[in-house]
Image (cartoon, rainbow, N blue to C red):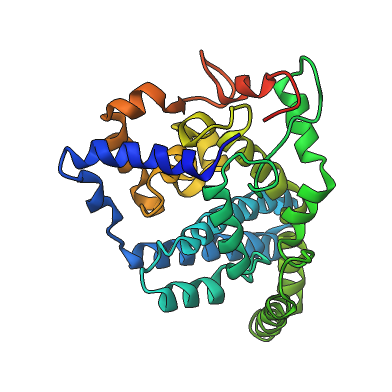
Length: 315
C-alpha cells in the first residue's frame, strides 16, 4: 500500500537530485496563460465546427462529430486538471474564473470538488479507500488486457461519472450542482437565440452522445494507462509515462496527458511543458532507474496493455 510518506519521499528524492544540478526544473514552472486561453478557444471551436458539419452538411457526419467532440471533451478535461493545480494562472482568482466560466460547467464538473479529490489522488496514490481514482482488477486468475478493459468500460459507476460528471454525485454541494445547471440553461438559451433551435438541439444531442460513448471509452483507456497493472508503493512504482506519437496519442492523450509520471513528480509544471520536463527527468539517475515509461499502446516489446494482463485482485 502507498502512503503519503512514500509519495513525498519519491518526490523529495527527485528534487534532491535536481537541486544538486542547480534546480533546472524550476524554469518549467513558468506559466504562459495565453497558451491555455488559446487552447480552450481552439477546443470550443472544434466542438462547434463539428456540430456545424452535421447541421449544415449532413447527418452522415454525426459519427465523426461524436469522436471529434469526445476528443475535445478529453482535451478540455486536461485543461480543467491544470486549473485544479492552478497551472493556468498562479493567481487563484483568475485561474478559477476562467475554469468556472469556460471549462468546468461545460464538463458537468465542480472545480472545487475536482480539486479536493485530485489532491487526494496525488497524496494517497494507490491507497484503497483513500485514492478516489483507484481501479481494481475485477477478475481473478489469468486475463487478457481487453477483458480487463471491458470490465472498467461496463462499470455503471464509471459510466455515470463519464456521462454526468458531478451532477450525480452526493459528495458535491447542491449550490455547485445548481451552478452547473444554471450555466447550461444560460448557454443553451444563448445558443438558441444566436444559432437557432436546430443547431442547439443538435449540439445537445451530440454533446451528450459523445459523453455517453466515445468520451467514456477514451477516458477509461486513459485512466488505465496512468496506473493500472502497477504495484502501489510510491509515485515511481505506481505511475507511468506514455511517450507515444501518432493517431492513438492524439485520440487518447491530447494536451500531453500521457506524461502522468512526470506530472506526479512535478505537479506544478503546466501541460504544455510536460514533454520538456520528461526530457529533463530522463537525464536523472533516479528516473532512469525507477521510472516506468511506455512507448506504445498495443504493439512493440512493452506496450501499456501488456501490463493490464496481470493476475489477481489487487491493482
